[in-house]
Amino acid sequence: MKVIDTIYINGEFIKPHGTEVADLINTSIDTRKAVESAAAAFQLTSKYTKKERSEILQALGGAVERRTKALIDAMLLEYGATRQFVTVGMKLSALSFSNYAQVMNDFDFEPTAGKTKVRLEPVGVVGIITPWNSSTGFICNKLATAIAAGCTAVIKPSEMSGIQTQVLIEALHEAGVPKGIFNFVNGRGNVVGTEISRNPGISKISFTGSTVVGKGIIREASETLKRVTLELGGKSPNIILDDADFTQAIPHAVTLAFNNSGQACIVGSRLLVPENRLEETKKIIKQTVEKLRIGDPNKGETDIGPMVSVKQYDRVQSYIKAGIDEGAELLIGGLGHPQGLEKGNFVKPTVFVHANNDMKIAREEIFGPVLSVITYKTEEGAIKIANDTTYGLAAYVSSSNQERAKKVAARLQAGRVSINKAGHDPLAPFGGFKQSGLGREYGVFGLEEYVEPKAILEEHA
Image (cartoon, rainbow, N blue to C red; front, side):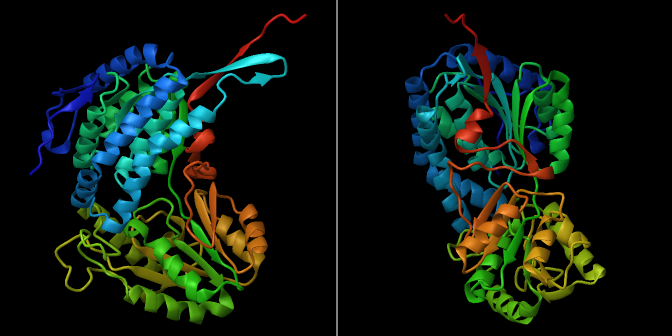
């Protein structure tokens, strides 16, 4: 059993005031101390030159990279992500710091508007609140953005990521950067998260998680008018146009839907296919899903691991039952465990066909390996179905005609649309339309969320 009984404030591992050890509970007292530490450090970091910030970013990135194996092992142990997923994710995590060093060095912090000089100043202490499904990646990117802007941070990771967080803190500590730049406080959202949202010493919050929690953060943060960036839930459509190569597009769609065992906000959980190609689609889906390897996430060949917890397993089961009860056709998968994996939180990769946007399985974020196939008659109809959602985080389009795909992509209400593959550009903006969030992360767009413009008006001759 791994016992984690310290938090990280002002460059030191200290004993928290919390008493509910099993659930990693700390008190608002610890959070306030972390805010004070970050505020004190901000008096220095806000004045750092680009060179000084760059040196800190490079040091942190190198420290994370050196602990890659330990971080991967922690992710595998703690929530069952597959080795394939965490290996790719860890590379991106370490690169977050060098990417933001590049963005910062190219960024003009003193642009001119009209005849006026504008100073883009760091917003202050940033409260960073992250989920469990890619803990290290979210923390690294948000922290790198804050440091590039000249901010300091108080970080509340998910209480379900204690082991991952501890390894990451140890790695960041070994970088030897000035104390107080980043501080970690474990605990529940209704204790630590609420204190971060309310504390007047926090100027900005960057949160990734559910839409429900995001709305609560906005309400709490409104009392002190904090700047807020939210990356929330998704119910992402994947449109397969009739001219696509279905032998490639459909297997890719299955991979998109079941990425990270379906426990990701950007998974393509709604697959839209032409009505006259449904039978072909069903055949390819079944062939693809039957080949998926479910089981031990430590094995490099495993495609789908267990759900993060019993609670999440039960949640996914309830959605599968809802799909059956609502009348969707169960193509493959279903209730219960895969054969031979009855003892873990393993879910059968499940695909429903003849689904529609009125069904719960097509409207709500499931966070598990469940795919809903919806048919359309025309391209216009596909776009309408895709946009008929309260979410707007990601979307996907497949077509053999790149120009056609780009025209469809331009009409989709989503913060990021990928054509013919699931792309990721760490310098391109990421965030959601509608109830999938506010603001953007990554690249210049992300950095702009962490600065405040100050106009310096001078008398001109």
